[in-house]
Length: 327
Image (cartoon, rainbow, N blue to C red; front, top):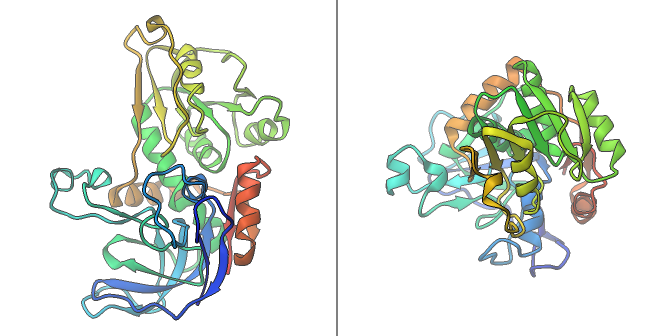
């Protein structure tokens, strides 16, 4: 197999040949057809997440086909198409797992963070944590749904049923979520990097009723705001744009420090909440919604060996929608 491995935090990934891994008793060996490029991968590569321990293969938006099963795996056919997401394993016995909140597990493993991910030709995954996918889906178009779609869905649930939804940072997750919001009759207000007219036009094309820079005020009070951009300074801005009783959802795994702000911006029973990781139930819910809405992803395709270029394009804001590696 071939993999793009992080050998040292802050340095480019290295293409290397490895022996094909052997799946453990409860695992699957999967041939990777596509792996999405997520901002979380940047946080891993750049060392913005704690306890990154190279060598590690990033990538947690994986679509592939099963080529080998562990001895204890049943119910998954060789050749079946599956998805591998961020939550690679949960302990199943901590208080959070027992309470149905495996996303907060005390002893988890995360794909592409503390177990090797999908920037490779093959990946080993726990069979209980893969998502079944239809045989006829487009692998590259589907890959971003495994995190950008899932985290967007969980964030929307956290935001509540409000009609006017502000999306701060119009990238992979927001361009998927905008389609869901439109299907539910919600109004989307898209906030992009200041002056990014291409992103604003892209948002309008996906049904946003308004699109502008994150330095601009919202044209109407928002019922909720969801922050995908990892910029702490946007939290006070989103609070000011949100009506009384509204909610600001921080959807990223990493964010720069939130600056101080007057209490009156929070007062009025506004709330700030975060979304952490995902559950398998989120995947089941979201893929049912995705089929109903017929989500169309905008994906820039890269070869596996061009992973560093894909990460650089994401870091510098050169992507429209999502990106994926296709070995």
